[in-house]
Image (cartoon, rainbow, N blue to C red; front, side, top):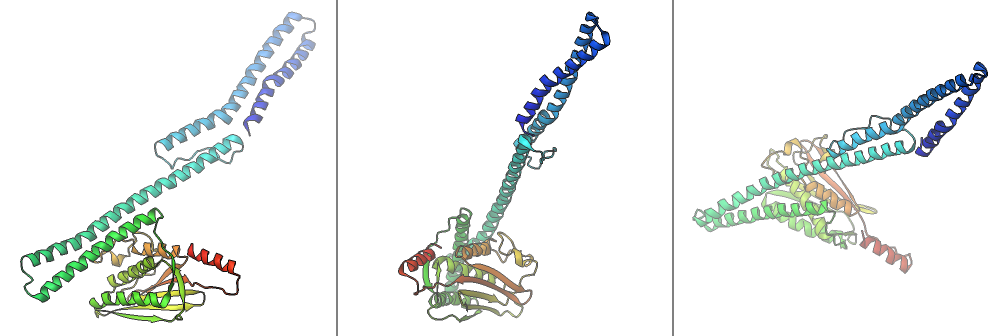
Length: 376
């Protein structure tokens, strides 16, 4: 019930009801006592007093329950909010109508939003601590290796050109590992602020992935990992993408595969396939590694998520690589998923739509479509 209605009822009760009751009582007393005026006046005053007291008690009780008690409950709730207790709920039914009901519903909406924000803040702080811990741990490993091999060079332990080259190559690789970790951290910060720098352009699928494979193949060859590549798209197939960020996607997925190859026979194989799907291009990156359990598949793209088999200090990693991959692919208007069988390997699939020019459209429509692709 709204306050205006409550006030009208209260005003009516204060004025009209006592008047009616007093007049009715006066009439009854007049008939009862006849012409005895003093007795009539005394009874009338007494009846009037009883009526006013009763009416006052009824109004006070009604106003207390309908106004003062809800305000008191709301005051307690706001004190809990001030103390950071976002789990406190108002005990009164929030389905009540009128201003009090609206006030309660607004409080509940505010409480839930504040609770969500506080929970998200706690989660984010925990994730940031885990990220710092992961990065610190993973930076310590290459730094230790760099110091050790540098000291070996300075002390002349590497006394042949072959050993010297091996030491230098190791130092170079460890420095690259550090650089990749720092780049991941920088990109993670950009993702949090939704400020990943994109430079979208049309790229030829065959030429682009051919260059990527050549670069990746050299690295995998140095690790005795076999790389198979197949491009089943037509030579003129194009997509709209940021070349640098798309390369980051391929590199992150490939690096993740390399970490968890770990086959008992020691042979690592990575297959990269580019498939034509009429209006889109599907990229598959498959390895013959340990695989991922079915219970872990839905979570591998979450930040900081690691399967039980990967919680190994030897594997390293910040735990944000695949979440970065997912973000980049989705920002390209595509989607990504994984299939895996434990003991057999994992396959990452991502899909990007093709760039098409429809010559049958008017020049102005073609320009608009081109602008849409450029603004993806």
